[in-house]
Length: 239
Image 1 (cartoon, helix red, strand yellow):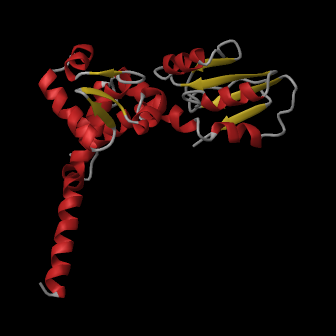
Image 2 (cartoon, helix red, strand yellow):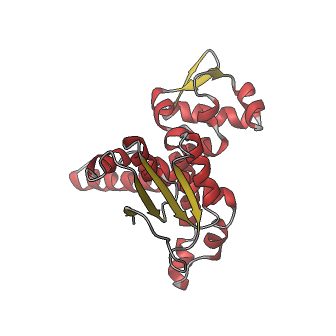
């Protein structure tokens, strides 16, 4: 094989690999959607046991688990599956799980790319995807997971918030993660998250789980149409 043939084969192989990457993505996103990593967190199980827990077909699930094992996300010993450290640390709902559920929705959208290019319009399927309440919950939790990486640094950077009673308005604060970080850093601070009606229950759930409902409140409203109130010392606006 001459140099030209060798280059040709490498180029073709690279293109094949690119075209097939969706398989790995779909295996990962399917495991997240079915709750595989959450169900195996801190324990192991056979495919049949896990299928009973998840309401899946045992044979189909075992094929999926074997694929996830081959990709390094699960471990298999004596017919029992468990999370590899990567999955235990990053792929459960409390880590990146909600973010990956959101990626699953976007994955489906890429299937309409040709339609969007031909029409120049947003596909109707994408609009319908955003209507169910569970989509909103997944979206807000995904943003919350991302915010947890930087929220403590934001709280530290706002040195003006010394240990005085302060009222913070979190405009369009969604998950309330930044308000939570501030409230945890400054014990005398209270915050109000101003958000759209369909986001409010999700924000309240996140704040309650953090044990901060008495100091971080959620107010329903649309800041583009309604007044924000008064008496606040600091306003947060994150794009």
